Image (tube, rainbow, N blue to C red; front, side, top):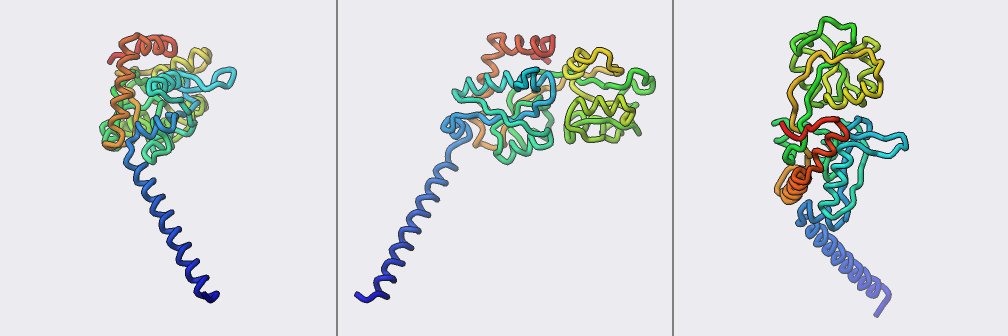
Length: 270
């Protein structure tokens, strides 16, 4: 056999092997795609959880710089109930839901409030706490007492949060921020007129900064707080397991215990 024919046969063999390898990869990819969300988590042995890490008492770093908080403890218990390890990914609020949607995170543990609009895009767990909202102003402010008083005013809030949306619905212009500390700083500096936030977070801030010149002008009823996962039948079994674990935590009193630990009150009921 001459040299050209030998090279031609080798090329054909290599091409055939390459096609077989590609077919195998595609088969493996298709097989992985057929596995639902819960199966993929259990096979990986890790529940990837999105959280901010700077919103006390939900998720924050303690004096030892260890990530902790109400949602951090619940996230660990969810992972434990699934039989896997919890892996927390800290990111800005604006990236949390987008990351869940894109599959970067399995779930978000960050005091996510339920809204009908969000429910169209994400599967939600049953509510695990109900957090009252508060309207906060500077101590010397005598003009803002109700949500209606926000018309034509300015507030500071995380972008696309339920608090920012509520402020905008009542005619306020919202300045986007990343942390509660930034919010209070803008408020104290007079750069915004007010903020709407979770009562537990404001209570926690005032406990740590008793001399802060801010006050609660109005307290509103609690919003249901839920865990979001990506939408679709692919995540239904994961959502069912999360609801099962939350039900066990509620029945055992652990959920109430953690609420008292971090918020000083039982927020587990409407």
